[in-house]
Amino acid sequence: MLSIRLITSCTLILIFALFIIKYFPNKLSHQQNNTNKFSELLEVIPIDDAFGPESLTFDPKGDGPYAGVSDGRIIKWVPHQRRWVDFAFTSPNREECGKDQNHEEKEHKCGRPLGLCFSEKTGELYIADSYMGLLVVGQDGGLARQVVTEVDGIPLGFTNGLNIDQHSGVVYFTSSSTRYPRRNYMSVILSNDKSGRLLQYNPQTKQATNLLNNLSFPNGVTLSKNKDFLLLAETTTCKILRYWLETSSKAGETEVFSELPGFPDNIKMNSKGEYWVGIYSKREKFLKWALSFPWVGNTIVNLPFNGVKLASVFARLKSVGLAVKLDEEGKIVKVLEDKSGKLKFVSEVLEKDGNLWFGSVILPFASLYKTMNYV
Image 1 (tube, helix red, strand yellow):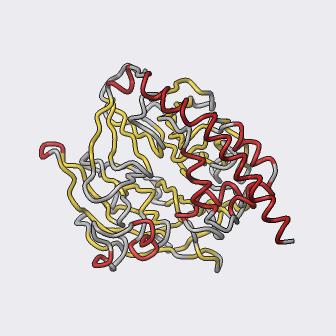
Image 2 (cartoon, rainbow, N blue to C red):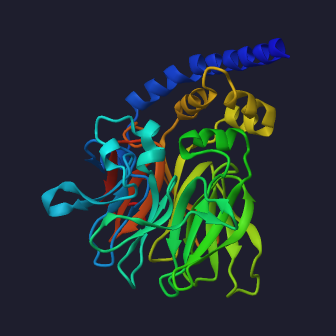
């Protein structure tokens, strides 16, 4: 049994090595020799001592954006000062989470805030922290308090996306997995884990309920313009799902809203009722093949020399900065792609006052696109 497993592992390693030899040099050359107007107009806004502004949001006054970063802080951009300032944090263990720490190894203690959304009624900021659960913090910031850590007796696990119905105050959020923590996110995809859930929290009743389960890496979530359905990014399947709410005649039904060219992260609606989706990476042929055979993904995940890291490196080889805009029917009406290498691993696209803000779960900066040329 051990020898068979070793042979299988070696075979996968060989396939992986051949993939690198074939594609990696081409990728570097492609990035060095190609630029486009989109990349030239991108403004990079560096973040000191941390990385990964995965989600972005503005407060009810229009200030911001705010972003959650790798050391458990939520930071706020102050435009006239051209700097980020600390606003809130999700863990009381701040002394363990300084700039000299390995954030990924410490994130289960320091927190890793992902989805963010302000309540326009109360001015409070709701936070989906991948380890701490669903939290909320007041207008003055500081240490956020936990409001949900489990639903139906099951711990949230990998808490991820978040959106608020600003009329009712109901918070919709996702748990991407109950099996794997955030830092092992590639394992969620490669193992075809289906322990993800779509959840809701009512601040008035203090009750959290389960809307959908058996999901494959549910990620970003957003409410439709008419508040009759939710759109949910299902990362593993590269799809956007539509879940009809109780205000619709289709209440409780789920259907595919859109199929995408890569792995979606967050989804955000603009003022026109269109939807921007951040694409972490394209779905390359090898990964598509691996996902078709669960034993391949599970073997990579369980490799004795840390298959998670190997899988993560593999997933990043051909990443480009990619975002798509969907119309109200789920059709792709705009694609923005940065081939220069400046913007990669896009987690979110937030449209605000004619500008596009880009987040990333890996890069040490946020990006701003200040033109209307994308319309």
